[in-house]
Length: 369
Image (tube, rainbow, N blue to C red; front, top):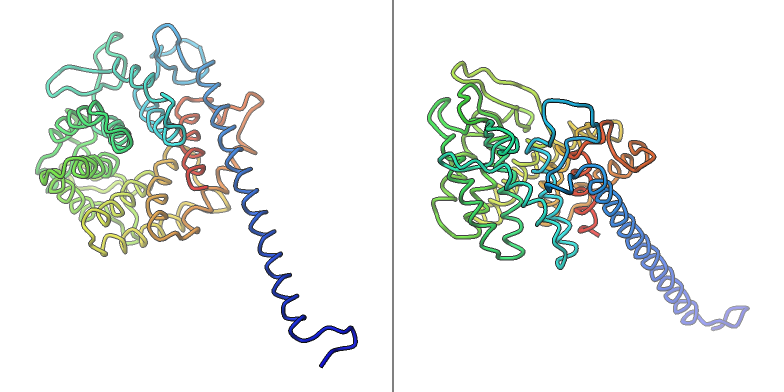
């Protein structure tokens, strides 16, 4: 039976199917265009930040970097090692996007100028030719984490060799005071921090993943279990440190401590298949997002947030839940819009660590597109 327009019920149904298919096509095309536009935007931002580093924060003569754009005479002419820990990871993420480029090489050459041959050898916190200085376990661990990520991409033995050197150094900071755990700084026996134990787990797990040597997994599990026993809070986050020998807890929370422990849980799940680590990762992710993301923004230390993104990105790779990523996108957009000056430096201090952190964040968000 036909209706007044002459259309049969079958014709009406087919027309609706056709219109729905057209709508879905145009929505998919719109989303695809948006993703490509966002990807282009991230890449352009990375290029801008890199250009600023090369123009204002690098000494072309020595290959070393400056802490900030401020040239007022101060204690150090060059940057501490810590900002280079951020820059080397940012360089790795850029090579993930552009495998034929050599973003890591100049940063590695700069890091080598912090090498201290005192046994066991490691990197000190300032340029060796300027003076001998202190060696921090966490500074070295951040470098090893970047190198182990690069090793998984390239299989370059240099990355594995240097990571093993750093492992041997960091293990010297492990003893039985406070029932275990690694100190923050060589020779300072007063504090054991999440920021030197969370990264230690990642270094050991990275070496286990690369070599299948059981000693690395054993070390990772020992430090992991100690960190949970001593530094996990009832809310599921991680306190900053335990003081030695008093056992007093520094109850401050920082995004990077949540990030390393989140990533450690994801890695342990991937390497062992034990679902309890995945469930711990989800619990920690929920607690970290609830505590740190308030009033549509994360706390102001970009690099701490970059480290937390590493953990959330690892979790997202498993469960594909966009809620782990969307708030990082929103915060990264806010920073570019509201915390960037006329020369496109981000952050209040025009610091190397802030530029490097945002390069890593934009590179990781681009990878997710």
